[in-house]
Amino acid sequence: MTTPPTSADLWHAARREGHDVRKRVVAALGLVIGMAAAVGVAVVARLVGGEALADVPWTRPVELVLGPLRGAWLEDRDLALGLQLLAHAVVLLLVAARFGGELHRLAIVDLAGAPRESGADARRFARRHLRAFYGARMAYVAGVIVPILAIGALALAGRLPGALGGIGLAVAVAVGGALAILAALVALGGAFGGFLTGPLVAAEGADAFDAVTRAYGYTLDGLPMLLVRRAWFFVGVLLGSAVRALRGLLALLFGHAALSAGAPEAWARARAVLAAGGTPPDADRLGLGFGDHLAAAVALAVLAGYVLYVLADFVSRVVCARSAVYLLTRRERDHVPVHVLRAAPRVREATRPEDAGFEEVARLAEDA
Image 1 (cartoon, rainbow, N blue to C red):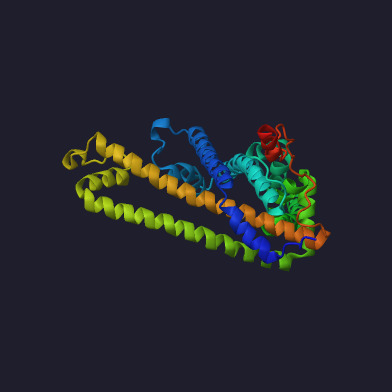
Image 2 (image 1 turned 45 degrees about the vertical axis):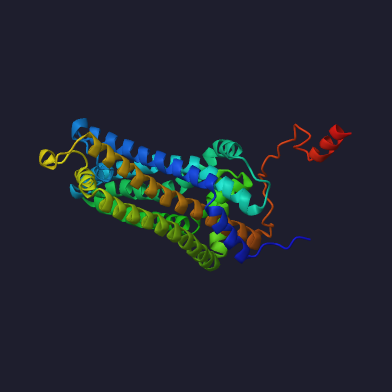
């Protein structure tokens, strides 16, 4: 009889599965598409605000995305700020549901010890359950935003003339207090146990309602242990990601030192292009040419690849850690073994004798 895995076994398994190449590729693709989606939302916000495409800071993506949000905040345009944040949440959560669903499926199958599932099967699973992955995330967003909007709508009664305004405001305060508590409960539930919805859908094939309600049940039933276990697994995430990030950073520093020693003038010109985000004002004095711009572009691509590698590795490890915490929590609360998956991976049927394990028999028959 196989001994059930302990918490320490799953802790090491989560660290091991976190740097699986398949998972990191899915995480990297999701990050790239998520960044592109955030840029798209920011560009639309800038165009709606009357900004011309020529004025968009294309070479500064962080400024491109955060600029409209910061402007709306500083100018007290609360409606514009809220709409932009909502648009970012809707789009980014959709990307997270699609690629996060595939990543959770790969992680939960590997950690449960089930037959290894192909990437194509994991993608199909994520597409079939996209509404569950997305709906569970949006339920937390709606659970916070809707009560707040309702409080604002009720507060409009305070604008009525005379005594009606005072009565309306008193009603708004009384009802709004309950709605504010509801929004706070949803926000805290999402912060503490919302991460369980992804592994829950990946393991059980649950719908959004079942995922959210069961996640709340796990959170309310065992919050202290859930937080301790989550922190313990996050330590494993930090250990693995920090080592890989340090290794990449040392590689970049060694490369920079070698280029500075081997071609100091050319590397200085390439760094000037990088610092300016394009052609610097004193390009003629520096003697910049096409080769310098090409070297700067390659250096930027290498740096972006390193950052993407570190982020993808971190995301993959976080998803594996969350999946392991879910499996342990489910075993403790529902008494379901770790290896049991209601949505089990599809086992492919053998189409050749070799796939069914008859390779040696076939060879012997040929020799005879």
